[in-house]
Image 1 (cartoon, rainbow, N blue to C red):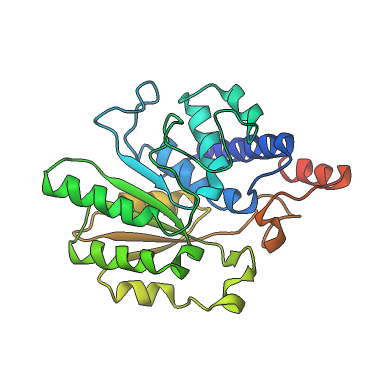
Image 2: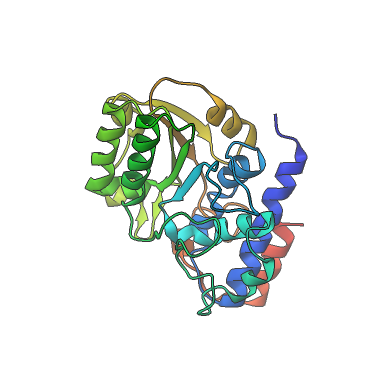
Length: 266
């Protein structure tokens, strides 16, 4: 069970994201806030094996952020853990190290992402390689539910299920919103759980902002590929942003809105 310490850490990460995007005056803020607890549980809950002083350690697990537009959330975590100086967050999207989408030249980032639908296939390839060579490593892939509109995602799901990749952990950030609006209105995806279970997966539904539920899901042992279906809220933590599709990307906000944000995190 996680204590208040990790809840405080999630709050800190939210503040770091807000400060970075506010300074840059651009960035995908809504979808970054929906995955904060997922990343906090994985990294600070000691689910993922990593070495911030040696990001390319052969002993590390792999985390692939397929929904690369939420890269600033991962940047905030990696900076806090010491993968690179926190000062780099002051230069987000400013032709410095941290671009709007992650790339593998950033310490702690495994691959270039941003074009949706690619991460899961890469994750499957890594997990398959590790399993074939009896390498004790795990692969974690965070995807958006919007990536379920991509055929390549379903091809990768078929591959993972067929090969029983029990070293592969897929996390679906299900916040029910894409840039165009609610997924039910754009192209209905539900019932996601039933569809994926039909492929042969272990599907665990959780509150994606409940650290204990996430911990239990990540820690559960299974002999087949596992999917954590995380029900989340886009813009989580800020009342002016929660469940609002237009906060997929940063909007110019006035001082009154900023004051509301400050009160939300006090």
